[in-house]
Amino acid sequence: MSAQASLWLWRLLALLPAAVGVLWAAGVAHFRQYALSQQEWLVIVAFACSAHVLVQRMVQPMPMPKLQPGVNPANVALLAAAIFGALAGIAGGLFDFVVETWVPSAHPLPLRALWHAACVFAASYAFLLRRLYSPQPRGAARR
Image (cartoon, rainbow, N blue to C red; front, side, top):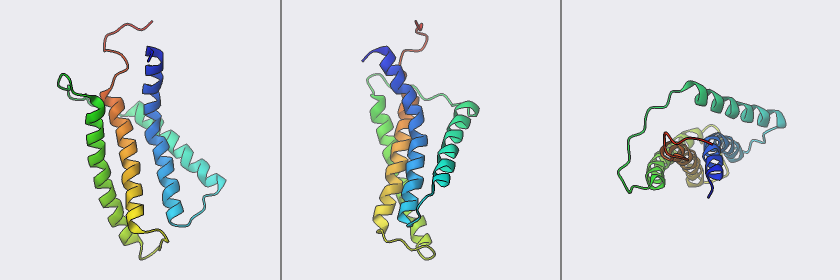
């Protein structure tokens, strides 16, 4: 893969958590039998884009720990994202269990918990992979 394609994919990884957030909101609305209007879709997408811009510009990222030689950053990101996804599945399942008394859903609780887990897994994997992987070595001159 060329350096230009690698840089393009690295930049795309920055947008994936916001896109997953939009999909998560759409899934939650679907589970609660709520049809989103065009204006509501616009608000959700605008919120995701503005949150992405604010996070990119205002949050100073902490330096990531140095990985041991021979450690694949994708495997580290995969393991951490799996842990975050499992915790989100449990928390989302508990939250959906409590909300079920007020807003019933036709979908089973394990499916909704799996949706929360899958969305958090995808967003955190993209976020962590971007943090751990650099498209070019630090200090390398750009052409």
